[in-house]
Length: 271
Image 1 (cartoon, rainbow, N blue to C red):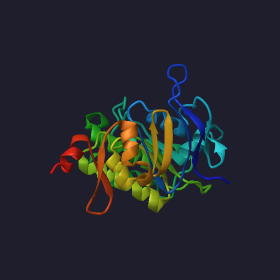
Image 2 (cartoon, one colour):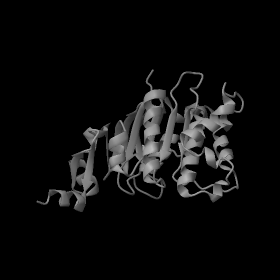
Image 3 (cartoon, rainbow, N blue to C red):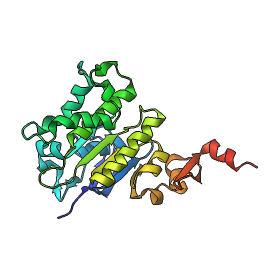
Image 4 (cartoon, rainbow, N blue to C red):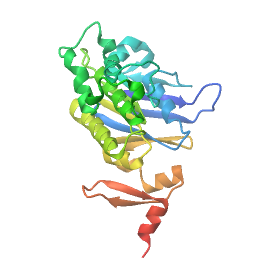
């Protein structure tokens, strides 16, 4: 049986209002951190909503482990995949802990063996345990984002009983975070993929974060979709074509390739 989350001729766009932005054929693998990148308006968030089963594509289908996503059912999907949206606002005056506890709601009929510890451990991993009793409406944008990351982690904390892979789908998880927490969160996501076998798919704007932490990349831009290993896809030539930016590759101290962009790159080339 085919495993993974697949896009088979998926037309990315909003039916009736926007023309198709791209046609996506891609297989996203478990135990892999895949970054979705591209310029504003390329369809990144829309594609993530298709992968989550929240919105039907204009054409084609999303397939999970060889079966169309719609045939898995909402409850079955909730046991296997968690979604962190771009907008982390909450309408009610929940505490941070109560928000994270919402991640365990799909498991209420069959609690996990360590159910009492899951929420607190997820909050510790995202460094929000000290905010547990704070109203989520009083938190900063970055703090709310980390609380919602903890909620998503709590939802897929334990492998499903059928042995299928767990999936984390995140829309710009680092957008509201400071520099330290960007690296904390991205490093955590990479470890979850490599050590826990989760399929992690995240929309990311910072290409250097994608280069440092992602295993593979799905690049959307100008109606095209390109997938593959991050270093092979995010080349200076691809960046110039999609974003119209010149860049220069530099090696970080740990050997990871990073890019300098625009004027920053030109300045480094001056004598």
